Amino acid sequence: TQNQAFSALLLHCREVLGVNLTDMGRNVRAKRGRRIPVVLSVDEVSVLLDELQPRHRLMIELLYGAGPRLMELLRLRVKDTDFGNGVLVVRRGKGDRDRTTVLPHSLVEPLRVHHETVKEIHEADLLEGHGEVYLPGALVRKYPNTAYEWQWQWVFPTQNLSVDPRTKRVRRHHLQPRYVQKAMKQAVKQAGLVKHVSVHTLRHTFATHLL
Image (tube, rainbow, N blue to C red; front, side):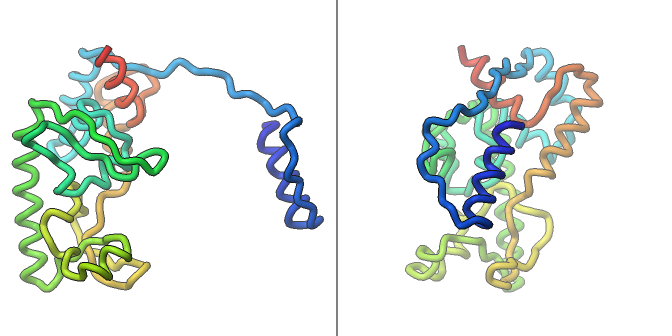
């Protein structure tokens, strides 16, 4: 595309020719065409949810019912679920900002049950000498035991422990996006939906159904 070629030329000038073209404001850049986002109907959402396995369904329901981005959901920690006020706290979302979003009443009890399951996994990890979760360096240095506390654990952890490549410590990381994307793709196919549906479609659907 024009923008890709333009960026390649800037990179060539800077890295190869040693010329830093800083004043490029007068150059005309290609504009992206606006696309109407895909939105599912209530019936389509219902059909989609029926095709999901129980271990995937809660995540998809939260994406639709609360509207977080996929990585925002996967990075939720236990302390970010406020059952009393019915909200989820999204940390360091787009623009590196924190915000809150609604936690649907219908998902409060399923999420509570899920928390209990995750807590059992965490307690078993602690008994085996693990149970540490990744935290920002400054926080770990100030409060070294915080990484083992329940409230800091991921809401959606992986099934297996793994070695953190940054620290070489054995931890249970949060689920990766491809895990949810694969489940979503399979459910869309089984539901027979003809729309081009992705995980992000649920965010558009959430916003539209709020209107």
